[in-house]
Image (cartoon, rainbow, N blue to C red; front, side, top):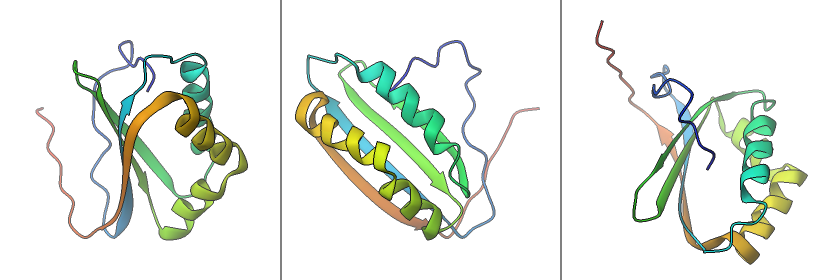
Length: 117
């Protein structure tokens, strides 16, 4: 995950369901050589997927990272999953950057939001 400290902290908006989420939870290894550059490239690349709605990130001080990607439909999520550059980054992540990870994909049936005015 990249450092988003300069960007305003706001969650991805609540979209009209149904849509899909991919929840990627990680624990990283000590050696993160090349991770930041690859992560930044993936963040740029996913924005070109038709149906990509946005992404939220969180990182705990203990090292647990969570990235949630939001996609309008299953086709958008499949396009991202099958992207050749993304596939290469996944393989490198397994080989170098992740101690462990889980991926959960779900169809959102209810969504709401709140912003203090």
